[in-house]
Image (cartoon, one colour):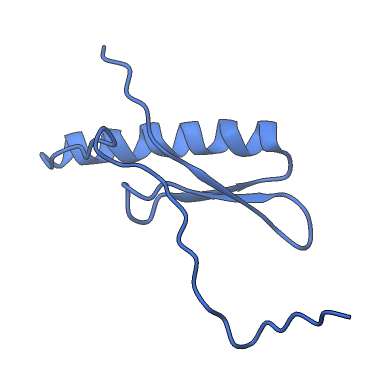
Length: 83
């Protein structure tokens, strides 16, 4: 069995816990009350997602060519006051 890595994004929630998404697996989203539980939940979600793709004869996306970067944009709603 091949080990495959996927980029996951953890979003802290205002009420606590973390929502986790997998950009290369559309709709693969879960939640955990702690980082540890969120990581376990997304691992399980990815494995289930892949199993479903295989069961239905669909290709399994790879994350090999994916990378994360930052872009800077001007946001007129944010103002900075300098004294």
